[in-house]
Image 1 (cartoon, rainbow, N blue to C red):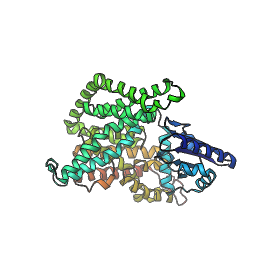
Image 2: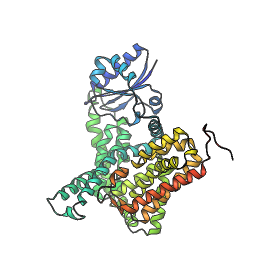
Image 3: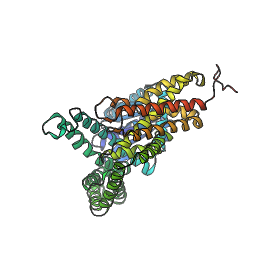
Image 4: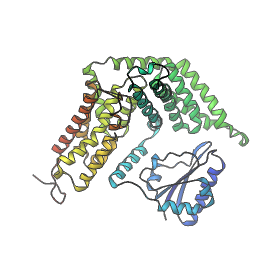
Length: 463
């Protein structure tokens, strides 16, 4: 008997979503398999899959004609099909899903599984915040790079209307960055209240942008919208014939009113004062204070390699991009690249201290490192935490401090080395590269000094 989890969703979220779920459930029972089906209907997610159920599943079925996120299924067998196929021949869908393969080598699979495990540990407000951040990041990346492209023609070329530089600035700064805070707030609310939370979240985020409350105001608006919408979703009771009005009229209207009024009259102004003070402080920071900030942010990036502390630092840097503060983001990305790069270098410099498998893993870690995927260090840290974690924290802290001291800036919050060739994407590019190299070398040397040598059988050599 195989364990299967499934998600069904049709564009309207009404009939076919549930028909497909019923067909899969019935077919699995007849075939002797156990199955749990999550439905993404018009009222939101029901029968939600838990991280434990996903981890235990032999296969994942996505029967959907609407977009369904698959990040939580990393490392699993995933078979994607339509709701129509599931309704028509559910047994064939199940058989095909069980035969599906998982891409990637063992090391990358370990990294994916580690990321899935960390995602499973996200609960409550942290989970909601990270949902908003994950949907916001593509806007910030695209917007930052488009702004950088406009600078290719001159740092002030965008001021001349009608030029290509001006168009790139309008798309990147005027559109992508303008959507950053509303999307952050909208998907925080979505994580809390599902679809009914999106409208009040987006509206609250837009109000935060208009008032000048920035990403901090957007975070507050998102949580406020989500919890108000969730309260209305649970408490408002209507006759069956009018139940369809809740997600499309009653909840969005009332929650948007409440969030909008509170943002204008209560929350917006105090948060704007806080944001302005923080922005001015960061812009006027002395080199010594900048070094301390970079040191702390760098250590945070390496501490749990994609966990809550890492994401707290990353969210801080991403949020400041909307306030035209680019230094912390540079330190954060450099420090996030350093752990896997340092470990990859360590396996090359001291081959006698690593098994054959670890040396091969080092090659994959190098690729993940240059791509700014800090999680590439996790398998090494999991195998030897007391030597690896202090080493990568020291290397990343030094990298973050040097980046801030050198005045390096970064306009795109992701991309690793692939954003470096874009003119003006990185400020003080030469010293930025130096910062990464120094931290990488420190990480490699420190971890190799701490690690014992291995004999030909992979056992520790006793001195």
